[in-house]
Image (cartoon, rainbow, N blue to C red):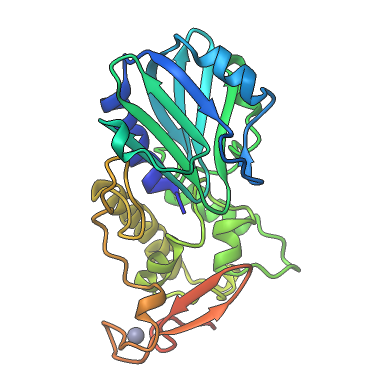
Amino acid sequence: MIELPEAIVISKQINDTLKGKTVRTAIRGQNPHRFAFTGKFSDKEFSQILKGKIIKKSWSNGNVILVQLDPGYLLSLGCGGERILYHKHNKTIPKKHQLLLEFEDQTYLTVTISGWGEVRLLESKDLNKHPHIPFEKADPLSAEFTFSTFEKLVDLLPDKKKCSAKKFYITEPGLRGIGNGVIQDIFFLSRIHPKREMKSLTKGERELLYETTRSELQKMTNLGGRDSEKDIFNNLGGYQRIMHSKAVTTPCPVCETLIKKQQYLGGTIYFCPSCQTIN
Ligand SMILES: [Zn+2]
């Protein structure tokens, strides 16, 4: 799944590789997908609008990748389980895809969705109404996301309602672009169990969790994303995950207790039962 680090990596690659290219043809919906988020334009309108548009620039917001198409439009990608690939030749174009852009110089971009993902076209003026960019959530890599911002979010949690670390990171209040993938190593390195009550964290634990969140997300980004995700050149990211499916029942790298997994809040959590305290 594309999360914050991969969205940054992919948008930078699109910016570096596709900027200035003119769209010759655009095909969306060749293989209809129930959870391909398309926006208000039909596939036919999509093809008509994109023809002749020039890629101006690309950037990301959370786990959404935005591509400015001049004049006047934005292509929105990312957000879920997508393979976004650049092709120098048509030979490598996958048989099934939800988006195919052919550029004037006979290079290509394809998007193949598994699970769900964006292949949305919107008018540039409607960016602030994008349904999959949670503008209200804090961006954990932004300059504004200081330790005091983080602490305020914890302090604002309602006293009577329980809120675990995972819930805090993903939904209440949630951090922009953060999903069940990147949190696994962040919690392990912070020695916090994903089910740990956020309000129970000591000052020291909050500081460690905040610092680790920033540093690991930056590390994942600098290394080209996690080793479970591919970039537009079909290369896996260089960040080697510690906590993931293959780590289950292997010894914890710190204390050698066997790593466990559990289903929790709509996804699997991986943790060391000794290092990551729940109370
Ligand atoms: Zn351990």
